Length: 407
Image (cartoon, rainbow, N blue to C red; front, top):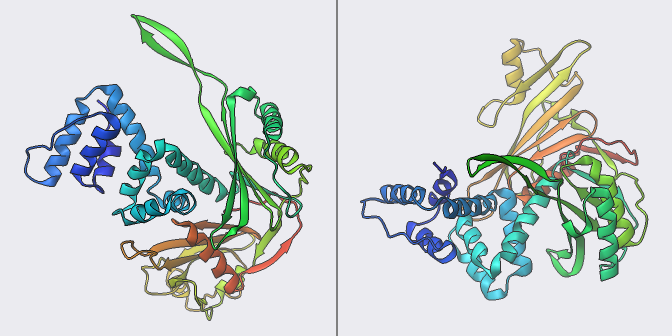
């Protein structure tokens, strides 16, 4: 039996008549409003009826709904907002904004414009997620203000270079070059974005056909992204496969920027989070849309032992009281020890009245490891500004270490 869990998740957030209209318009699945009393029973009846539909039709529906739901998390919301701001005509912008919640907006975008902007939003979401982690993103220093040339001959040369790097035929590679303008100044280029979709090597699967076991090859596609910021010369490459970072970056730099890749990794920022161990530390929240901030974790390490103390936002005491309680010593003090790990939790003001306040966590460890856990792209900037405002960013170097970054 087909799992309808994605449909259940969607129906929690949209009205049943609207959902039935979408089924009829976009999937040619026509179901009447159930006769049962009560919304929950009616929704359950619709889910039951869908399980009795043709498997291929319902499978196709569930695959679409899974992608619709992707645009309803934090990165998805940011991607949808970017599409609204950059690509929708003015009347559609207002209509889009007036829709009840992100689930309505995601479905509306799926039905709009032959899914072109829907797919654009999914790509934007993927890029944002890959950009967050040092496991999926690397940055290189390039010259400032280089023009990006995306003529047919340049694109052809790019695809030829990518073919060698990806070990994939050139006709199995799709590339797209986009210009992204600054949010606060539509005349200023913020960055260029290069999207690369390509086929992986065929995989063999087995299935039964006409009472016999047969082997079939299937093709799966993967994606990578490159961004170039002319104002600061930063070129970022994003891929789940770190071995592809350098050859993809080289292909884009040589064929679109017209210069060799410098191979010089972007600056490494180090963090002075020892200040968080001071019992007198008071976070500066000036103009940051932060309701509250708390040091929720501190770790110390000796020659042969280590200890980490945590105190969640829900704990009315601070991290120092938690440490005294757990060590059963009022004399215990983080301030005279070397801290090797810290976390700060931020409670962030909601963007829209219909939304809840959000939580972001900044985690610091080692000399230069920093990661942010957040739900909206704007929260990342708030985390960065919090670090700067509170003197936690220590210095930058030209070291080419491949330090893990969560940013």
